[in-house]
Image (cartoon, rainbow, N blue to C red; front, side, top):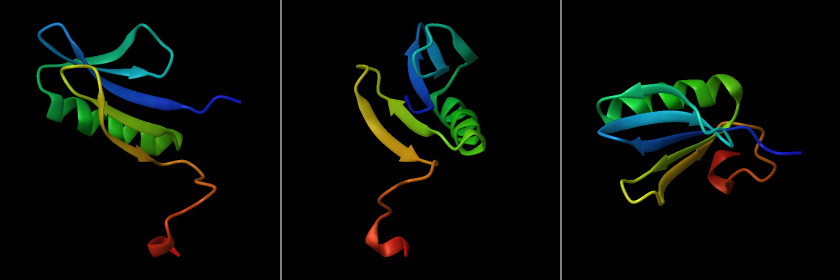
Length: 76
């Protein structure tokens, strides 16, 4: 079973939010900040993984909004 995910990626002169595994953007934005705000809301609603990619394409931030099987010890 694959996990649901949302990704913020560099797209031309702007930024895009894409569903994991999809080549098509859900929505385009002028700034990364706007894309992060939008993508985070989608990930929270879908209980999905959320990834923010830098200009180089590497993941620079990630969050999990799903059912984490191993929550951090400080979140008991």
